[in-house]
Amino acid sequence: MLANIELRDYDYIYQDMRLTNLKRINIIYGRNGTGKSTLTKAIKKSNDTYDVRIFNGFENIVAENKGLNSIVLGEKNVQIQNKIECIEEKLKTSKNSKKIIESEWLKKNNNKKNKKDLLEKTYTKCARELKQEHTIIFGPNYDKRVLKRDIMQAQEISPEAQEKSKKILGLNKLNLPNKLDINYPNLMNFTLLKQTVNQILSLTSNKKIELTELNNEEKENFAYEGLKIHEKDTRKICAFCGNKISQERWDALNEYFSNRAKEIQTRIKNGVNTLTNEQKKLDSVSKINSSLWYEPYKKT
Image (cartoon, rainbow, N blue to C red; front, side, top):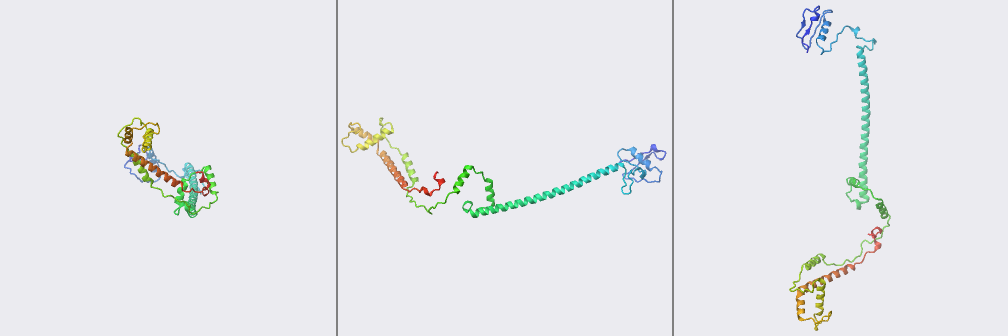
């Protein structure tokens, strides 16, 4: 704020060389010729901070345009006014454009909402039709939520699959009986059979002696079968080689093939016979007539 004004250069008007104790607002008045305009010059000279202008009558500020309908303050103000009018015109244009854009946006938003509502109604309608017309496939609780999920998970069908589906759709309906007459056999409990087999496999025969000549399974089986064949032969002659079987040989073989081994053999034989009988039961089941199968399933 300007607090003092130097008046030394204007001693021909003012008695004091300095005007002091100025406040933020100062009112200075006087008659014409008492130095009011000169004081404004002094203020302007004392400080460049303020934009000081001197009013010296209307003739110095009225421009060439002296019409009564448009009094303009100075030539520079004419240019500013033109700029203002140009800016106002742009603002007006922008406001109009904004209204047009807002109107267009509102129209498109309403159109979007209408399309969305129509789509939701279509989902509901399609889900209802699928549920009512194809309940076996889609179930009684099929709705638009499930339909949307199915659409998202849908995959394109290959040409081969399309062709296969067309053939299935083109098949004539077969006159199938409500119930096929099949006599299912009464089979044993195969779980128990499995347990029995595993139990037999875990059994071992205690061999008290070793016969080096029976060094593999084939020879053991051969000797065991020969022992059974010759048990009732009082001549004790080997049917294979024709030699006499000594009592020591009989004792060694009997001890080698103990009663435990015979028991295992018997259980295995009985198990094989049981499986053979069960297989016969299964073979006795009448096969379904191939004419009762649709063509695409005959190949599989």
